[in-house]
Length: 269
Image (cartoon, rainbow, N blue to C red; front, top):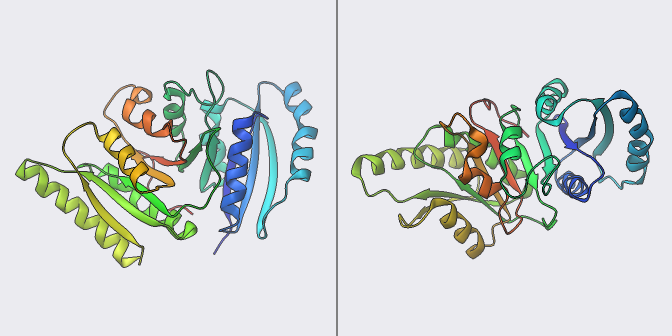
């Protein structure tokens, strides 16, 4: 297995420290290179952070099989993170949510969606309050669209890394045509997981209430440790998709694995 590359954007705030901590936690499960990336506003500020980044690296206790590197570049998180991830051939970007300002906006999640749509590889998003612990259950919500299925294999890869069970979630459909379409989607997912020998279960949620609330109720009742979904929308302003934003900034502070379905086209990890 070739070494995986995880990028952790870092700006010396507690929430990016949490993202780095989570990256090291994953490193206990799979050999990886963790690239700690700092984007500076200009060359002078970047030069000033070089020593701090090296000091940070020297203090980290890397798990066996994990290599830590640092990179300081002049750039903007929204326009450059996707480019850097592609140049470095990253399999995953591990990021933390901020409050009112910074990489993400906690109260709307709009910055999070802007970033997700800027890169081809998946994002693993954590919050300041995310607990670093073993994950036994992963929730993978899908819908009637083909785009929503793009997360299935990626979530399966993460399940293998974490030795976790996958819970595929879908809403019950009262309409016969829609129900037939849903059963077709479920059949595809079940076959993929069965062929890969991944421990998975299909869960049909009730048709009442919002899908987001039903997902979070399932998460709480089943001790889910990670949510994984494919982001897709017909909106001209995808960053205002409240469903995705609420999952990413969930009140339980669970880590969320998310991909932009319009760009993702290959397996990662």
